[in-house]
Image (cartoon, rainbow, N blue to C red; front, side):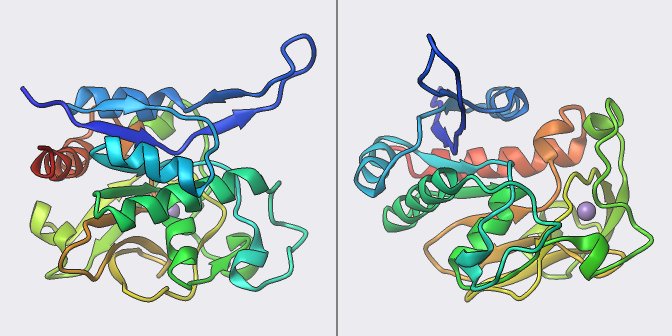
Length: 245
Ligand SMILES: [Mn+2]
């Protein structure tokens, strides 16, 4: 059976002496979800463009994972006080991996921060902080454990005719929600697939005939028992398998 190699955008954890090189890691939900639904996760360190291209040549797909806020300078804004800590090296590495995947036409699954940085890469902008810039009755930053892994926080409305709608045939379903930022202006080719009931973008896909890219603001990989997660992540893994030699 074919098992596609899926590169996960990594995080680096700074360490102190004597282990003074950073640890390279990814959240265990990312690796568990990829393994559960038939892929082989690969976690690199931060990569420059040349290294990212060399790695993606050997891989079958890219998963842009969750994490810290994105540098607002990347979408032409000053950093607000409510914006979180920026991991500049991670921004550079994430963009290098995304560029490489796009150059090689490898399928890309974007989760949370991944959904945001890919939109910024295509020229879009962000709400730096939803509570101050787009107040709503929905609590998008619902981090309560263990609820976040299995329970739904808010509903999303699926845009008819989009790939997400075709996957389920449902117009509305519940998701978890672990974000205080969100997509504001759409980048070039970014097509909405779902909105939260307060109008915040929760999913989009790239308008392209030859590039598969799906983005989700929620965390399907954390909802390991959810039938929706099974379908969303299997959809990505199946796309990666199609491109295997
Ligand atoms: Mn949300």
